[in-house]
Length: 373
Length: 81
Ligand code: SF4
Image (cartoon, chains in turn cyan, red):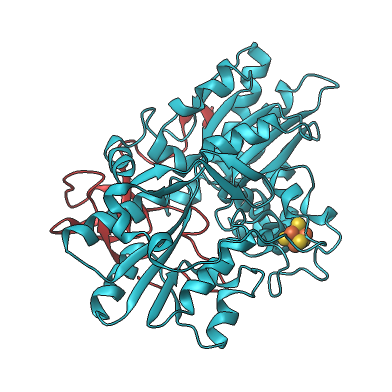
């Protein structure tokens, strides 16, 4: 038995679901946001909602790295890729994200050289193997992924690589949660914290959510039983009148995070004053740029880029989905004009995007949990 | 394993913020050779977790180890009662 199988046991899921139901106050409705797209994926894939009483509504958050990239930044990537001698590298899902000037896949069809990599370290390897080309890594992701970009830059600097740079779109999770807390559209009761981001940043940065904004937050793992246990912990807080930050994912997340990774992040990156998030608008101090110590690796400084803000297509309601104000199937183009094969919005691109997760698994979730385990 | 996890039809695990638990099977400078539960191997950068030994379990994202697992990976007894 693989270790994950134990965390997918449908009988234990049933037991937890029943215990959660006993904690619900009669007549009360609970809105719990799972911040991370990985959680959204698990919820739909394994039908986690089917084990919950109707009083508990799971609201999908903005934690899908691909989904929050605005169209203008996609166009910037294409503008870099179309310059002489450039190899642009990016993670797989980025290839299909639509910008104002098409997607990276479409840019390749026009003659650009954009390659998928699994890690920025692969991009650095490509740079070393192609000294006559300029290799750029299109960096996206939250604090889970930023350490791999940072480490790659540390190695590039140590190895004296001169034909490698990074176009940095890394974002940070706390300002996004704050923006959601400030949004008048949403009345949330609690959060499930992003487990892998928390591996790096720890639990401490969430403490204000409990102490100042009076919402419980439980850092959660990614298996169905992790999520159900986290929801149980949230509900137990309500039942006992507590409001705290708790850690369900103790097999991986330490309260203080990973200090070695945090130290390197601080050295390699600096906070941008503002960054445009798809759907959430411009959020102060919510994204990373390369620090002055690494500016010679900063593609934003060494390439001509348009840097223009491009409005989302009119039909696209990703912003509302990202804030949890609209559920995927409530978007007018869901499953018709917008599908994973031909996405209009970013939420339909990555399998962690709420629209793609619901499109792929949502309708079948009740049967799915039994088939998958 | 490089590239294998970024198939367009399956979605990219790095984009999905997915991290996988791998077991160290050998040391190679600042990298470790690791194996997943399916027997696939991968080179993993270990600068963020310090010295690793054969048998250590690491949480890995984009070929970089983010944390060393210390607890046994099993459903807590609290759920089983
Ligand atoms: S269906 Fe498409 S356009 Fe509508 S919210 Fe989802 S991804 Fe965006």
